[in-house]
Length: 90
Image 1: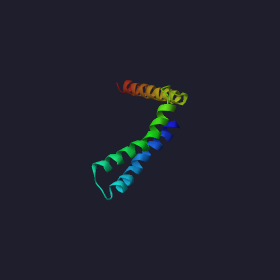
Image 2: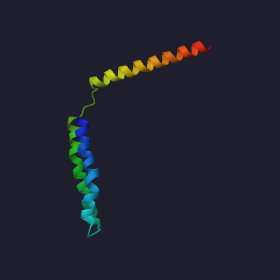
Image 3: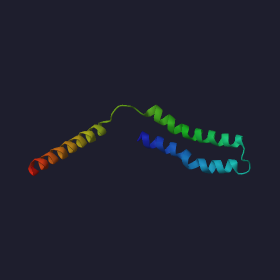
Image 4: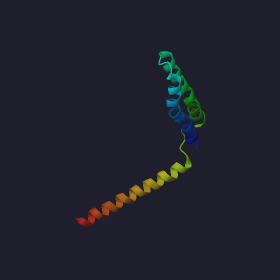
């Protein structure tokens, strides 16, 4: 859920940057205006960055462990099945 919230804010800059840059550079295509447009994009990215940094964790979640076990079980079943097929062919 945290990833979704931070991603929403993070993607806002990608959505808003072209419109904002177009408005800023409409009349004057100067270095100062380009700098301003990049700073505005950076400020728009900031809430997503802060949300992820403040609320994320490096701990593996319980739902990920269950899926990981299922994936390992599925992989081991596939391996055993392929070994059985190989033995029968010989």
